[in-house]
Length: 213
Figure: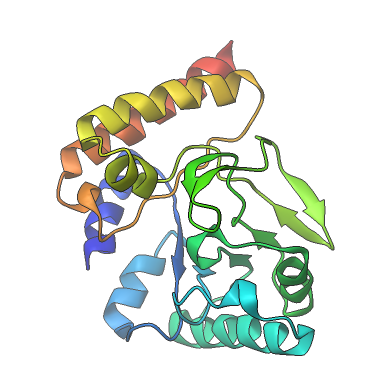
């Protein structure tokens, strides 16, 4: 339901999101699924947000798990699911290979950079702001710091987060990178919707400015 409150702002501004959902973490009511999918892209966020994906070594087990999530979400949302984002932004060559075999075309699990990456508890990232392909899967790095890093790790309020993201976006766009943003519906922005609207409008302005220039 908090996701729907964010989507209302997006619809008003004219922005389309990809919503990544864990297929077995919680029930997804049909009415919410219908409204959330209207004009949006639906992606998988694994079966559960339990952090176990990176520790699965058997290829067939990995394929089965990520395919199970895709199939269940396609049943609930009644549309094709081609996008994946792993919990905690976990990634490995094994996971990417499994995604390819399980029918995914796009992965959004790689951070360009995170101040405190969960798997290392230190700074980490692929340091790329452009897409690239691995095993037939298009990898799109998360180019802005995710909301958890700014709100919970660096402890910045939503108003200051907006300013920070806009400055990041200007740099990324100047490098011909994609502005890729990760926001959790259960974090602060679903309570500060005006800040969310300001963020989206500001990012659109950055995009238009650099596109025209």
